[in-house]
Image (cartoon, rainbow, N blue to C red; front, side, top):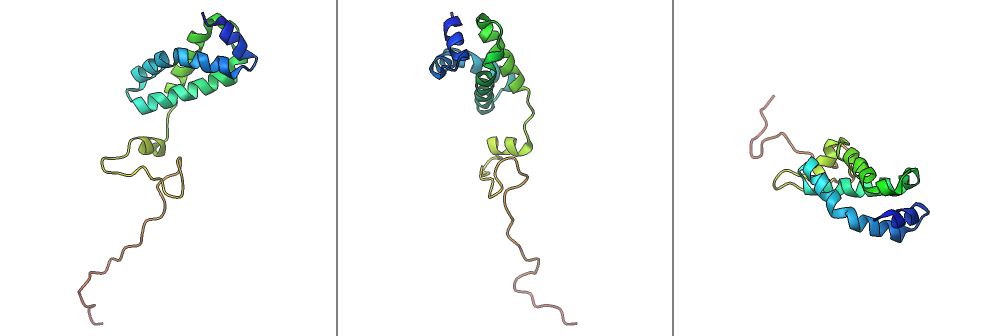
Length: 128
């Protein structure tokens, strides 16, 4: 079924690969969602798997095995541990911001915190 498209994609035909991705995308999303139980993370895993498949397509020995091969890549992508900054960016606490400050994703924390004074306002200092 996909053999002709796979063979064209193997020699660099991006349109053929795009057509393959559209044909198998929903099934891949269902697999990823069953594993991850999170639609955003599943979407990220599918995207990463498709990118990996495009890059590794020349290693596919049997074009008829494209879908099982892609599903294996996808399953591996679903098992990749993500950093806490990655998880925090995707799943902020309720009312939280997804802004990572100047440091960007993958860093710990988000920018500098403003300095706060420990002095009580309206209270005169004790004489020495």
